[in-house]
Amino acid sequence: MAKLQDPEGIEMKAVLKHLSFDGKDVLEIGCGDGRLTFKYAEMARRVVAIDPSRRASRKPRVINQRIFIGGLSSASEGEKRWLFPTNLSR
Image (tube, rainbow, N blue to C red; front, top):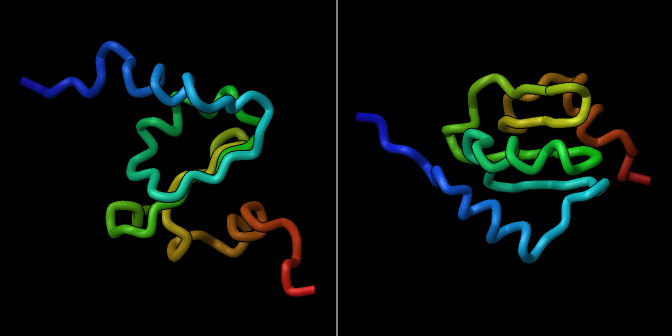
């Protein structure tokens, strides 16, 4: 039998008790597979969710031009420009 992860939504209730994602740009470091990311992403204006672990080395995903989930090492140049649209070296 498959194990259910937080079927009552307790994790998100706890997060939303302390944080608001409404219209904000969010950087989530350590997102794993994005399980929680997808739960708050519709509230945020833009989400960049990255994970430096090997779990995230699979192909990154850009969803609806608002959400990026994956590892930076495997991101394409176009995805990196989307993630970091400003030249920070000035």
